[in-house]
Image (cartoon, rainbow, N blue to C red; front, side, top):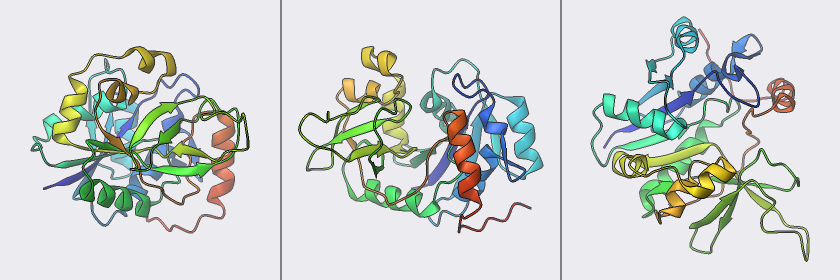
Length: 246
């Protein structure tokens, strides 16, 4: 059973165009993500998956493995499925999707989530961290039951603050599948609420696939808007994970 990290990355982000190539301490964001993923103790191999020749060239410059994909994919999950097929993975091989805009991702979060996936019987696993800030529509929140099953995902503040302040479950940008469950997802049509919320995994929930979530303690966050990029540059000055970029 192989364990492969696939990092989807594109230039045409609507909220922060070309963010994959924005630099933090003179290193592009996508390379920060790749190098941190390389510190995973469980992964057998790691690839950036992109439709951009510019990103591919940057990966070559920094000795990061990269596979060029079709430009017509609707989301990163569809993109990594193309690569998973190219790699000829078997149905029980594990695919770990690490979003290319997570330059502060902790490799231990990748490994803990992968172990949780292996020990449980979910088709897809997405980790979460605790988060208290309200009215952040760029952040995906999870509703999770006592059996660690994800009931819903939304950009709204959910559950609502009607009775008391609530600590939200924030989606950490790691998604774990088997090749079989990724294939099952990719055969589904884009769903109603996936379109409304722009959350690709709602397609799986709406089609009754089983999604689970483990809690992670982490300061990591995705670079979705300009404020995130500014914040990430400040965080890097005190970051304790040491990366070899040569």
